[in-house]
Image (cartoon, rainbow, N blue to C red):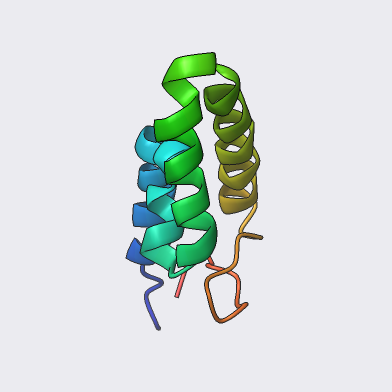
Length: 85
């Protein structure tokens, strides 16, 4: 009988998004560097000055978090990051 293991890539992606989502950490982790840089720059340059940047990246991170929990969030290769191996 084969034992199912918890996917640490999924767990790391989930935790990065939960705690550092507005900075795009989960996107850096999964290889989506272009959108990760966009989230980071929006948060750093417009987030603290106008507040609008924080709102935008917070909504973006929340949508990503929902996709991660539903196992629909994809890595740079376009494959979803599953809960189990």
